[in-house]
Length: 113
Image (cartoon, rainbow, N blue to C red; front, side, top):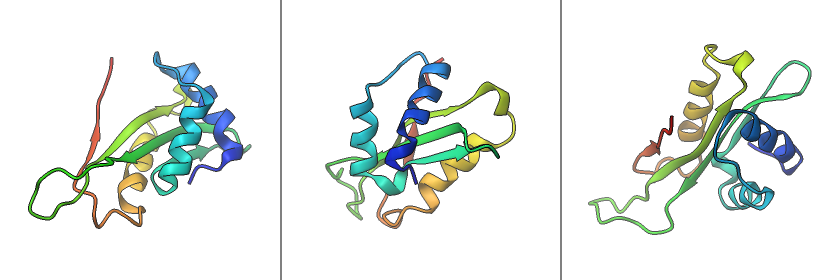
């Protein structure tokens, strides 16, 4: 899970790799609201090399089981560490390790190129 101490590293990975950049309070909101859906990958020196921020819908769509949707809000891996399966592992952790995953209907990721 993402600790509050790791947020500056998460923000650096976002600024370095992605065109849409967020204020610190955006990360604080995610970590405080859905701590079990956000993760950071670190290298051997303790530097953040990737992260995923996940969230769940506040409202439940009308389906038979009334399960909320889960979404990946932001996903980034530093260029040097791409093609190593880190992003896949982060996404898998978001869905599989969540205590709420038994109630989450699906995980979506909107890609921007």
